[in-house]
Image (tube, rainbow, N blue to C red):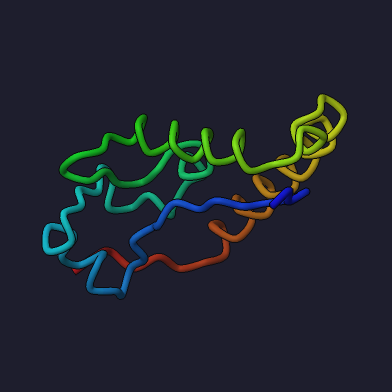
Amino acid sequence: MNPTVATFNVMEPRPGTDVYACPERYGLQIRDKFWYEGTSWLDSPVCRTDTMSETQIRDWVSRCYKEFCDPSFRSGERLHDLGEVRRKWDAAAENTQRHLPLMPAS
């Protein structure tokens, strides 16, 4: 197998789900119950497990990309192109948060 593109995502407990309401049932700890109000979740997992820290989870995601992606995917040119995608994503997230009425967790 030699994929040219791969994505590896970390599970994010979403408001309205049992995982979000009762993370301890699933062996999770959510550091900020309102993680979805900002953009820090783009850089770091929003929860940890009993056996893995946010840093360890992020490191495993990084390892997956390194081991399963074609080297050209990680080229300087490609990463530069992704920077513009990141800026647009951040702007869209901020715009959405300004217009989305957020309900406090119950």
